[in-house]
Image 1 (spheres, each protein chain N blue to C red):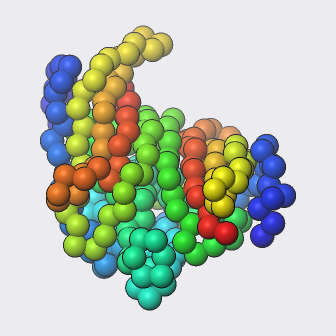
Image 2 (cartoon, one colour; image 1 turned 90 degrees about the horizontal axis):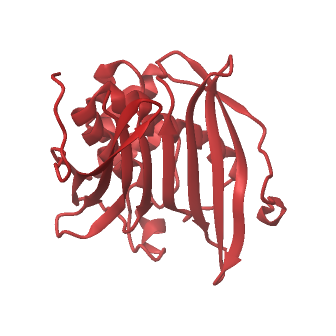
Length: 137
Length: 126
């Protein structure tokens, strides 16, 4: 993967993923998080969410995958994230993960990019908002 | 679980977990991920597996909601590695009939090399 010169305002290639019950179930099996709000329709209907919602960490993983695609091992081995979960993602939602370069920081002789990152659903609602930081060298 | 007893600073006993190939495969199935081609576990997979050890300790009630997450990676972790998760309570307050809890956690290799740090905030129903 060639190194890219990032500039202020540059956008990371977005990542699109459909939320499905199968993917939610796979995530539960991978992580051991079997909270019924993610898996049991009858239970989930009785909650304020009114139905099954995806794990917040599953949707956050889309941001991580997007960052890995853009920054490779620098992200996977040295990335930093700070996010808030704003709205639930439900089966059938199409999530778009985005990232925009907001600035650069030099720390210990290394250059870091700071990004605004997040996820939106198919109607543009914010599902996750936050910041990420990744070394560029 | 007596959540009132979890004062700020309460340290949970450390827990070890192994990065298993099966869990990584399921994670990638769920995420549609490619980052595993970089050989080390994706940051959010690491964090999720570390949080699993906390979920087991906290006996989170059904309906608990994840409200925010911070994480920082310090180095790669590979399939087959045994890692240790240590965690402590950073916040535990009740407002508007709901419990707001924040837990700090650190993941390290058995020899002590730090791999990941995180901060997880939850709302627990009464």
